Image (cartoon, rainbow, N blue to C red; front, side, top):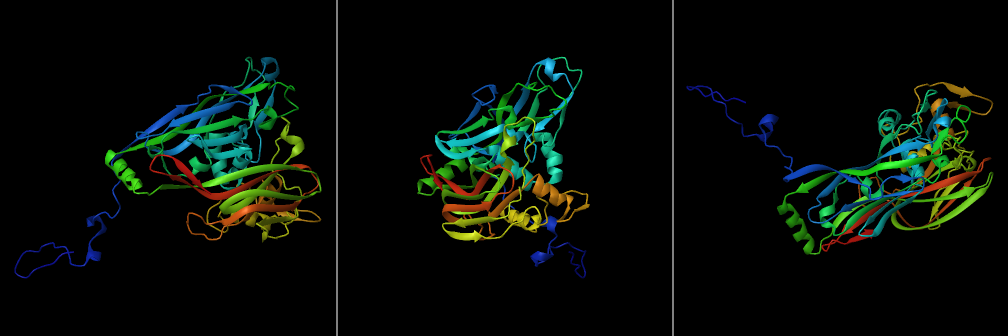
Length: 444
């Protein structure tokens, strides 16, 4: 803005109205970050190289100089082993599950803070499989997931192979629960250690599938997991900030760290059975109940990919403390749209603008027979990447606890014509409270 004064030269004067000031001339309203430094840390496992059924343990020291932990992930190397005489023939292999990712190798994932268990995810591979198939997108899984997790890769053995074992596969795996919150964990406030334990699958059939027609039976005899490391960004803040936070906590305040908790369980179902399952939760904010299914006969076989399957599931009812929250009759095989919509509510993605489902296919062809007509995307969903769920979310605001209190959850469903193992995931809000003496409390 300029103001010309009669009888004098033109002068440039800031106007009285603040809104008239160009944006480039204004003071930045964003807060300036406190002085800090960033360092990428690689913490190796204390257990060294592990074979099938082994456990890898990583311990993170906490305390005054530990700073914040941000962007953590787990990386390790997978090598399938076997004699050259069997491996030299043409054949293919890939990871199992709906996402066909390297997370299929993980049987159990647990975290401990000061020896107190925070996460205990049995059958963690099934949870990873469900989240990758229904909370990512097809382009992400085909590109990013392919690079970092080997998702969808089909590895082919060369007929000219002349050495034992197979080339190593290097993967980077996202963490779940406490360390999967995308928030920085204040390690400097905790007195003790943060421990991560990963238990690998006990048999090859649990996580790898091979082409039984082109590869010698038993050619892949084992697997090893090496170079297990936790990688994260260590953010070290200036001492004045640390002292300020500690002084505030000395007044009785607690540092509150919120995260999404997963509880998992599984049960075997006979074909054409009516299943009723009661599970004690004791949580104050249950957000969703999700179930995936895999053919029981193929879980231990190294010659079956074992994707998620629908199995003509027709009834899915969920009750929380005796109050039914879902009574929709699902016909998964003939009408997958309703089942998929209810599942998307569990992920907080119903009718939003993002694509969070990898079953989508650019091919819009419709398959028509005497009883149904389905697009290729629908067929992929109910036949290969099926999951079903019910949301217990009460509000859509970003509150600390937005779900439903629940002591006992009851699930009823009618099984189809195939014997399956059902994996149930209970998703809830939880908080970790850090006290002034560095101990923690878990609020469920």
